[in-house]
Image (cartoon, rainbow, N blue to C red; front, side, top):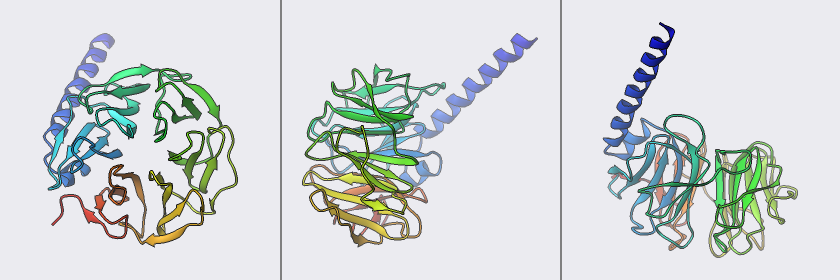
Length: 291
């Protein structure tokens, strides 16, 4: 009887997963999608910069400028740590959880997200990198957070412990010019490492929560601080100035992504799960697909 109940429970769970997957596959708009799932990452599609790739708890989706949404592939895995290759439009990186449970390890797509392959388990893996960043100047260098900070210098084929992760880590980014300079957005400030995440210097933004950090190819740093808004500095002069209130000034934004071909264009997820786009470097924002 116990075996029968176990088999029935597994069968019921499988049916439920199929039903959930079908529901997300049929999502037709950004508003409908964000009402049904969690957003774990964003990227402009380099093959078609007018569209936005949306990594969710239930697979990778693509949103058109009018807000319509379509699944990129049949996979309904939970894509965490999602990020795009800085120059190759067909290469994407991620980690996360398979639909059936467990961890994915470090995974990669070479066909713009249609299919994925496990490249490595990571240290003490399979890992689940909630934060994952690739060096813009050397895409073979990647950093992922799984307890400690792990790094790879061969495109993700092998990983090693780089150093301890800063407390209350939220986001990671890599310098536009030096693959050994790593930025960490945390609940207590913005940290920087000059030795490949081996050690961390005193915060360059301190005493505040920093919910996201991104860098442009010219060394501009963008960071969001709840209550202060979207801030901007440069790597050469990390004295932050307030750029704008941001799309969610009373709350926060997460998963800020820049268009590498047009850095003034950016996309973000707000604390209320709205996906918003700016075409002027974050000064003004509109809801993706909004009128």
